[in-house]
Amino acid sequence: MYDYERLRSYAEKISSKIGFAPKVGIVLGSGLGDMADRMQSVYSCSFTDISGFPMSTVEGHAGQFIFGYISDVPVMCMQGRIHYYEGYSMEEVVLPIRFMAMLGVESVILTNAAGGVNKDFKTGDIVLLTDHIATFVPNPLINPNVDELGVRFPDMTEVYDGKMREIMKNVAQKENITLKEGVYLQFTGPSFETPAEVRMAGMLGADVVGMSTACEAIAARHAGMKVCGLSFVSNPAAGLGEAELSHEDVQKASKLSAQRMADLIKSFCAQIK
Ligand code: HPA
Image (cartoon, rainbow, N blue to C red):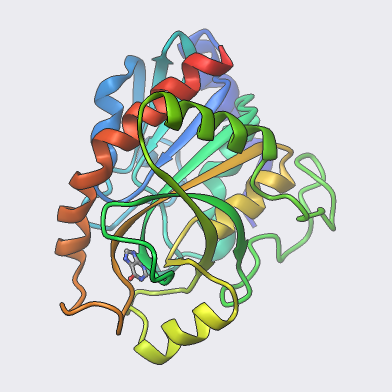
């Protein structure tokens, strides 16, 4: 179990350095790190500057927090995330999300690269998450409850906030960006799925599959933050496309959506100002 008090004191230290409470937290998935260039940065630190913090070991994940403003809204961006498949416990994986809550973040935007299961989805599509299936990974709240953050048995009826979704849909329309909607299913990775697993995911009601996000959304909801999830389809999931899957191709494909994803987030911030 991590030391809640230690994290608390680090949050206080950071707060005094940045001089504002971030209102929105943004987690940038594979290949989307450049989005941080769009913000007016005030302060940044590496995950490793926080003693005991897990470090992102994945290619394309910088592993730093950037504090600043997007459309005049105080935000913190997590450039790169921690994945369960890196060998960290689920509790460690969601530590940065809990850190966001401690700093005062009210709403989080979780972005990720995902495989398209829904046959109507194409590579490059952006999908607004309506719900998730997290049953194939351990729940990040397993362990004694952190009462300071939330209740033992948090409700998950509406993980992805209805109001945030409405705002996202409105700004997408204004920006002329097509937004698909769908259910995210999290597998552990790091191997990509087999075609049989992808068929199963589809039968269970999933539209996209990935290796992150659902666990973060659970931890965020537990801590009382509102959640918005955006997947970009980096490839048709296994068995639905022609090509073999690779992390390099996922990163390359992410460049297709990075610009639109950044426009969406920027307009979203302007809207909630
Ligand atoms: N499966 C799981 N995770 C992913 C995929 C995929 O096909 N593409 C990008 N992340």
